[in-house]
Image 1 (tube, rainbow, N blue to C red):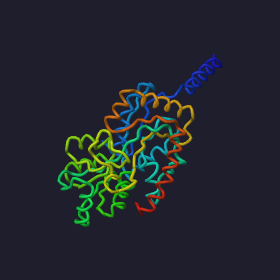
Image 2: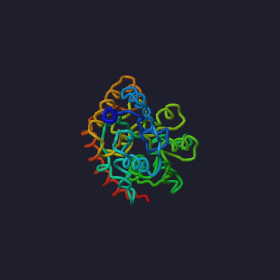
Image 3: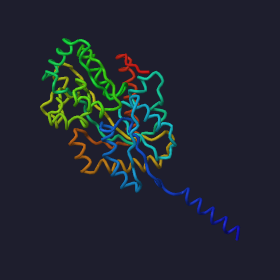
Image 4: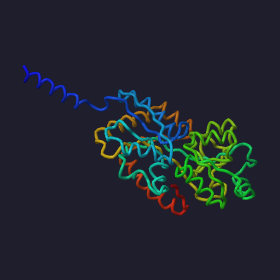
Amino acid sequence: MRKHSFALLLMLATGAFAQPYPTKTIRIVVPFAPGGNVDINARAVAPGLTELLGQPVVVDNRAGAGGMIGGEIVAKSAPDGYTLLMASNSVYSVAPHVFAKPLYNPIRDYAPISGISNVPFVLVLHPSVPVKTFKEFVALVKSRPGQMTMATAGTGTSNHLVGELIQMNAGIRMTGVPYKGSGPALIDLLGGQVDSHVDQLTASMGYARSGKIRALAVTTDKRAPLLPDVPTLAEQGLKGFDATTITGLLAPAATPREIIDRVHGAIVKVTAQSTIRERFAALGATTLGNTPAEFGEYIKQDYAKMQKVVKDANITAN
C-alpha cells in the first residue's frame, strides 16, 4: 500500500510541476507613477492578456529613479513569467547611462518580449505662458534667464532627455523639475506649478485638445494626425529633430523560451485587436506587436545611441 501511495504522490507532484504556464496572477511592473504613457500602455493590454492567458494580469506601479527602481525589481525577479516589465526608452536606453551606479543592464538582465506602441513627444505649456509659437517660446526663455521651468517624468527619463535636446538645439536653458512619472508632472503643469513639459502624446493629448494645456510642437519629423494644427519642431527651426517613444514588454533574463513565446503570442493578438488599435490611435500612438528578436535589436541600437546623447548632453544623476 505504501508503495502505491508513494507512487500516487509522485505522479501528483510531477503533474503539478508540469502544469502549463500560467497558473497564477501575472504582475506587470510599471516603473512610473499612474497616468503616464507607460502606465497607459500596461493598463490597455492587461485585460486582453488576462483573457488570453487565463490568469489575472495586474499592473503594479513602482516609480522612482527615472524608472530604475521598477526596472531593478523585474531584473532581480525569478525568471518564471510572473513578473514582467512595461518599459520605454527611459528605462532600457537612457537611465542606465545617466545614473552613476545603474541598478541593471538592459541588454544583460532582460529578455525582450514585444514592442507595444510607438508614440511622439509633444512640448506642452501651461496656458499662462504668453507664447503661441516655438520661436516666441525661445525668445521668452532667453528673456527670463533661470526663471522658466520644465517638468520631467524623472531624471534620466526619455522625457527629460528629449527636453534637454530641445534646449541644447534651441540654445536655451530652463530649470528642470523632476517628478516620479509623467502623471505627477502633468498634474503640476495643469495647476501652473511649472511652465512646460515634454510628454508622450498619449498622456497629454486630451488636455491639449481641451485647452487645459497648450501644445506648442511635436517632436517627430511629421505632424501628428490627431493634432494636425500643431507644427513639428523641425518646421519651427530645429532642422532634423525627430524623437519618439517605443514602449514594450520585457521579462527577466533566463525566462524560458516557451514562456516568452506564450506571452508574445498573446501580446500580438491583443495589439492586433481593432479595439486596441483604435484606442491607441485615439491617443496618437501606433501599435507594434513585433517579435522578441526585433524588439531586442531595437533596444540594443537605441541603448548605444542614447549612450552618446547622454554623454554629449552631460546628463548625470546620483
